[in-house]
Figure 1 (cartoon, helix red, strand yellow):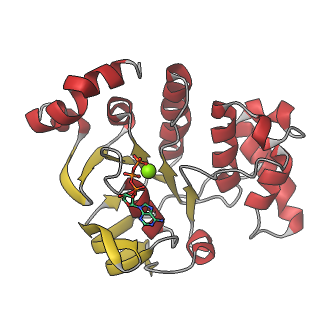
Figure 2 (cartoon, rainbow, N blue to C red):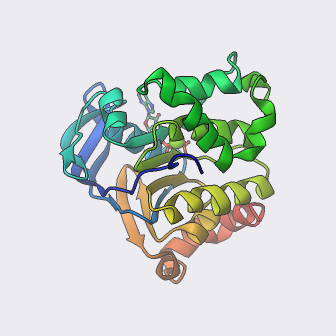
Length: 254
Ligand SMILES: Nc1ncnc2c1ncn2[C@@H]1O[C@H](COP(=O)(O)OP(=O)(O)OP(=O)(O)O)[C@@H](O)[C@H]1O
Ligand SMILES: [Mg+2]
């Protein structure tokens, strides 16, 4: 690899975090920690506040109470660009690429904090990690398949060699096999490169398989957390996420 893909990870942590819209908290009392070399996941039902939590970490949604730190720096309510400069790369659940622009242009935009002459080497590093994108550089992002589009969305964020990757449901709308590959090869791969990965996933079973630690969000609060193998033994978790109707959903994830 010509230049490093990601930087050595930093600890991302929150305490007493509450955040929401128009001054009304959607998530509250959130204390979570993600550490270098690990995948930490947040799972929870639709509307439990997963995206709101991630957005509050990266300056998109207002923090109402509490603190967020990355390494030595407090990032609470910093604008997104400042959060990015401090090493946090965020891939949103939607609006993750610019559909009318080419793959190459999307990657160039991802490098918006770099000087022009740094960009070609960075693109090479991203293409080494996602070789599938190599043959698609002139294609419009809007014409990519779901899996290719997610690779591009992650590639865009990798342009700035992040220390921390914050990923919001990277497998949404992907076919099960593509989803599994994306999680096991790429998302796990970021952590194995030494970066910090904070992953939101609805596919609880698939998320647990690649996670070192998992937080369960319910009604805007962390209701449970643990190592995946312990959560898998927890009747409450199994009932809510791996059993009943959830079993039907996650078995279709395989
Ligand atoms: N821009 C907004 N303004 C006001 N309320 C919002 C806004 N975005 C989300 N909400 C509300 O916040 C709550 C949590 O939404 P959020 O998108 O964080 O959940 P989620 O866990 O990510 O759900 P999903 O699994 O469907 O992605 C929901 O009740 C939602 O309606
Ligand atoms: Mg969401």
